[in-house]
Amino acid sequence: MASFEKEIRKILKQSGCYFVRHGKGDHDIWYSPLTCTNVTVPVFVKSRHTANAIMKQCGVDYHF
Image (tube, rainbow, N blue to C red; front, side):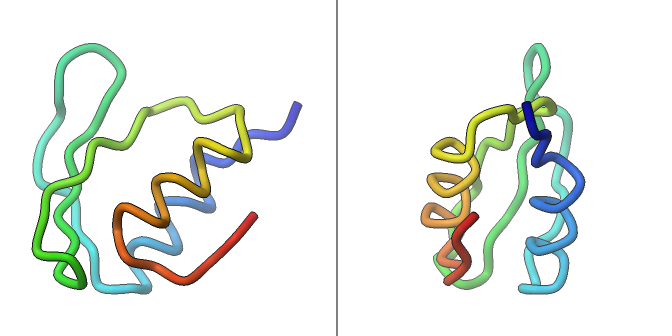
């Protein structure tokens, strides 16, 4: 299975999103200036559907 963690973080940084803090368990909190919201991003992302949902929540027009 493919892992999407590194690419998600790279795309979020390029879009202006930034890391806020570590959340509970294996999650990180990122801030998206595009949607003005905090988004929970899992540390391990194995599913393409989860990766696309994170991009949608952040307001980034990118699809895996």
